[in-house]
Image (tube, rainbow over all chains, first blue to last red; front, side, top):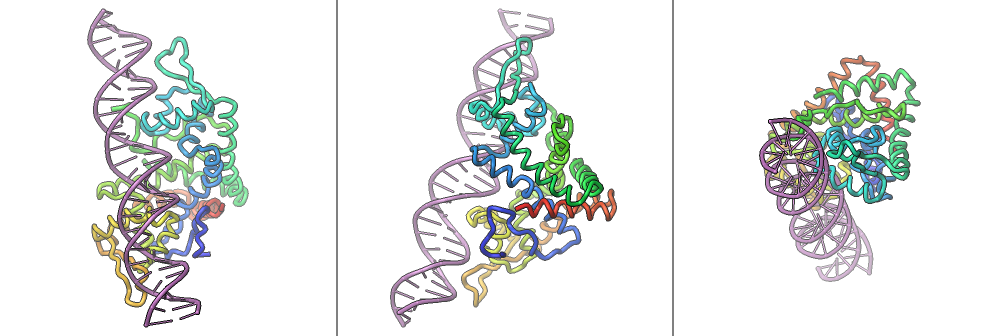
Length: 156
Length: 156
DNA sequence: CCCTCATGTCAACATGGTTGACGTTAAAGT
DNA sequence: ACTTTAACGTCAACCATGTTGACATGAGGG
């Protein structure tokens, strides 16, 4: 309940007075993000990995032989920030990097079998949460959710 | 300049191959979170504040005279982590803390006028993004969005 | 051959979080 | 009343993830 702090988990939503009609939606976005990533993060933590590692694995899984430069662009963080998690993944042999013969300038990244497994499982946890929610509201609700998110996501 | 990369903003969604039907939804959640908080964060940055400061202001605005202990519980982070941003807010006089006469053990937090203004404006940016999206899909769509998010958020 | 520039790496630093140790103060036992 | 206990809050040390700046390296064009 309120006290006892459910910490590890969803930190108890609700309980805050709403000053505006959209406050509830605002809080839902916050807790929704946490809720979706929670189980994946817990799994990743058991492997000594975390969100940035997962993001790299996710992208490389969907674009094999991607160069580090392209990866950086997609992730939207600096190449220096990518460097450490990337090296860890290489060292753990979850990724391979090879320079192609004609494209010596860039290294091409690819998942190993172990990397694929971890990516699938971590992303799977996130998809599971989404799937359950979508099942609960039906296809029309799911479509509406995506429509809303698309507008929000494109708010550049 | 690195790449020109649309950096500041939404880092170009899409473009990734989809391995699963729910990949699109998964990416939308990621970019949706960024999209909602982006303009608020930019505003806060001009004041030398950031997300943790905003979260504190948000909660205190909705529960005046909250104790630091309760604040910690709601934010779901350690009291030590709350300490620095909290002190900054006090020092900047966006918050006041007083010990009530009969409850000497805890300090009661409250927004100053300046604090209220900042909280309203920052949260307002976030609500604006949500409002636009909700307007786009109509009340039924908004309700569906909230239903989905509620399931996801409660995924403890 | 050299100059340039994309690519990648290394070092230094900022920030937001963690845990551990500690003071302080209210409440509970005796 | 006095002591013990424990909640509340602060300080210090540390870690992870990001930033910027400086630099190495390798390809390709004059």
